[in-house]
Image (cartoon, rainbow, N blue to C red; front, side):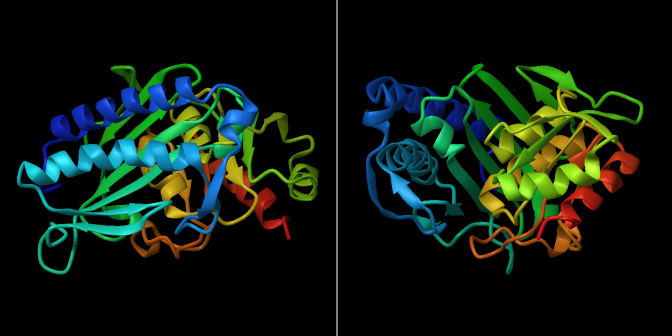
Length: 280
């Protein structure tokens, strides 16, 4: 169970951040306007101006929650680890807010209308501790929310993965051609179509609502990419694996790297993990 702000308070704050981020995108129209960099973020990638502005919008809401008396620690792609008060939580387990202001920055920069805000709130330092997930996809304007033990929803409607095995549509992320080729050789004859959305959070969210039957990343990903949406999948009845690590061993800090795979069923997940293992 999460300490600190209630689920309703978190969701209200994140919705306000989404509205502020929409303004950022409306003020930076076109590829040239969005292709402005300003250094390297704590997550290791080059920071776009729109990355920083979208992160600022989220941190403004975190500041207000802190001013209301709440304490927590933010783990964000650009700023890194930022403590609000003593970090919140209980004992040695901080209350963590794991943030990717724009998951799918390349899409956002190239004005492809598929990128997301991804935020997870956790009562400890591992994937198993995530208690609230929020993913907002800006292209379709869709909101995915999950509270641990209470299911998952898309725009307020409950989500459950569809029953039955079979890989009709599979998403691949970190989709450099050589990696895709290796994975596709394993999936040839076992999956009908491949999609490369460009946002791990969105791909996982689409597994949760059965738009995709499964997804894999063809290289290790970071906690900020997957922390929120992995809860959406599990709460919707799907299955997620973090390479050889259990969820309780998969840490939420920025240094952590792990494989991510998800599917509607364990059998389909095994097929996808086989394809993932073929990537060198």
